[in-house]
Length: 169
Image (tube, rainbow, N blue to C red; front, side):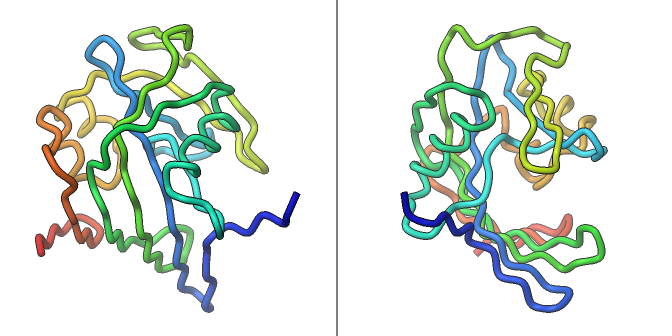
């Protein structure tokens, strides 16, 4: 097996990251996760590796984090995401897909349904209502997704997101 290299560039207090995420839906809910030391949630996914397609990344990440084989569907958003995190200025290129995970994966409308250790982070997963109100209350960046969760784009949409300010090209 060849060496795995995540696509991240470090430049002093600046970081570039290539992230792939998936939105899985079940019974009117969407799957989210967070590192237990964080207050905010994200959509499941992770950093792409050199030589790996974005769909391969998402399938690999779901296998690593959930232990299931995800089916990747349409690309929803291409996001140029600019934000500050842990004293660093981040520039993230994110691809967000709709995905399916197997029916046998646990579902509960409010409880944590899965936990996993990912390197130095303890991750927890839960289903939340796929509504603007639920995602707004949850604190789940990038925040524009809350506004679009009830009506997903029919074709991939390019979004430039600056810590709460939306620029549409």
